[in-house]
Length: 587
Ligand code: ADP
Image: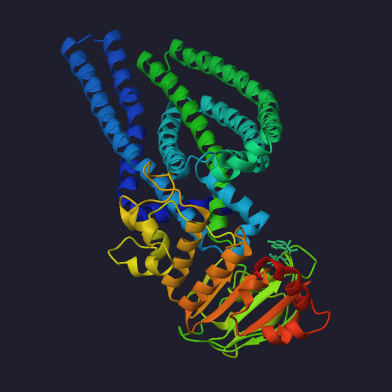
């Protein structure tokens, strides 16, 4: 019950705020549909009694015209409302897609790597469309339920007046039938839980297969077989869930059919008996038979609406849960200015969520305002993790990170994020224009100076629409596919455009040779000027223009100092790495 009320409250409130007319239309349609069966229910018996009795032609014509006229008007009203409601349905579905999408993008980063949170996103998405029918599907059931209750109340009144025993039979029948429907519904909910995992895998396959980045590996490593085998295995699992649902529900469906047949036979015999004994007129006989089947239909509708509502709300509840998903980080309110900062890691240790191994172990370091720090070390030493903690993508498991002497958890999260402009190794460009990729806006701001500074002058001027040219061909057939190097420069321009006090390069150049990387880092360093900068690399060529170097090894800072200092440490990691790598760039 809690799920139904919270889903209806949340969904209806969010929809009504944006599209209030939708509910007005649905209410009018519900009242029209509820009134429709009563037109014939009250007028038809009068016609029948007139035919059997006085046979006054004028009265017969008037009654028939009234019956047809009212039915046409009500049907017209129903069609009109349906037409307008349908126009809103897709809009509302898109609106909730946007709400989910926005929440996904605003979710704490660490949850985007969390299996449970990812599953919750998928459940929210499918729960809000596929299974529940979204707001349209749920509100349909809700309004049909209210309409059916109104209809049932009318039919019950008629039956109570002329055939109370039939009413008792109807009630007993309906209770047993409701039980069958409830069982079927429970099976449906269980199947949904099992299917959401399977569907997540389906959407991964669907996505991975069309991604050009996967395309190369799929072809070169002949991954087609592996992908198709997994796909088949998933299809088998999905089919077996659907089969299980069908097989389990079949006996309940069958029992319900036979029960309904028995009830109809009883109704006809009983009402015919009343008519034969002249307790009721022929017109009332017809009215009671119509009321009986109408009530059966209305109660069936109510049971169906309630079970559907429970089922649909259970699915859509995943949306409510997701929109309320607890954050992974502590967020403070302390303001932070955009200026040079002193940064300190104090006894910081960190293990990724749901893992035991300490990826960072008692890291201590203090970086002065405006200092340029090079972070080096072998792959897996913890360099990126160090940056992720500084950028608050994760919080330390132990210890604290201080910015200007204050634990970073105390700062206002959004303002804190304003302080950093990182370029990560796995940076991503969006399928929007070059300008939007750099400035995140398509306004008239001129980014020419910036693109020139990072060496993109020829690239941009060579494009038909300059910086307004779309990157990739997702949305635009004329879109450009920048080379790896050009993509890096765009990402670097993006970091510079943010104009944050702390800039970070986390090996976005890993695919380049050491000399090319050195050139990019050196150029970037001159563009950065007096800002604080962190340069990550496992190559030492990129260290030489930095004030200090921190050598990471197995999650801790093994050596720390200037190039000249570290080079001298006998048997030191830095000295050995430098010696080993020097041959690449001695020339
Ligand atoms: P580096 O940048 O020095 O190459 P990272 O900081 O990326 O190293 O990784 C340090 C260790 O943390 C590695 O062993 C890596 O496998 C592990 N790691 C990185 N990201 C995650 C994650 N999201 N979940 C679990 N372990 C991770």
